[in-house]
Structure formats: structure tokens, C-alpha cells
Image (spheres, one colour):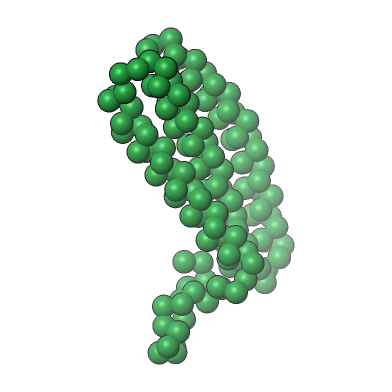
Length: 127
């Protein structure tokens, strides 16, 4: 957990230290979105071999690939917001991390979207 937990008070023990910061809340939300999207994609991938209908297979495979792309984006956002929450007092370092991660994300997203389109096309040819 970014920032750690409160351990000195008995009633607040186990509570996140940064729970009131906006960046931490953004981290928790984006981390949850990334987990849900990636778990959904894995679940769909596991059951793809059981689908007999060619059309349903394509629809599910397309969905799983897109969920993977969006989950990765949410993971990058969670990483950046988690680091920003922890490094908020060191604004220069926090901004540098955000810029580096943002540049990586945009390059990754555009390249991965091309790869995803190619993968979807190959799935359609194969099945």
C-alpha cells in the first residue's frame, strides 16, 4: 500500500496513511479497475476453447484482447497515481515519474492497439 499503514493507534490500526489524499484515492480506483479488467480478460481466455460458435469465439476473443489493453492502461495509471501519492512532497520527482510513465503509456497504447488489430485479424483467419 503506498505510504504504509497506521500502526500506532489501536482503533486505526491497519488504516492507510494516505487515505485522505486525492492521488491515493485515484490509485485505489485505478488499481481496482485494472484488477477487474485483467481478471475478466483471463476468465474469457480460459473459456475460449469451449466456445463452438465461430462468431461467438471472435466476439469473445476481441473482448478479451481489448480488456487486456484497457487493463494495462489502468495499471499504468495506478502506478503513476500511487507514486504521485507517495512523492507528493517531492514535486519535481513526482512530475518526472508522471511524464515518463505517460510517454510510455501513449507509445505502448498506440503500438499495442496495432498489435491487437493484427492479432484479432489472425484469430479470424485461424478459426
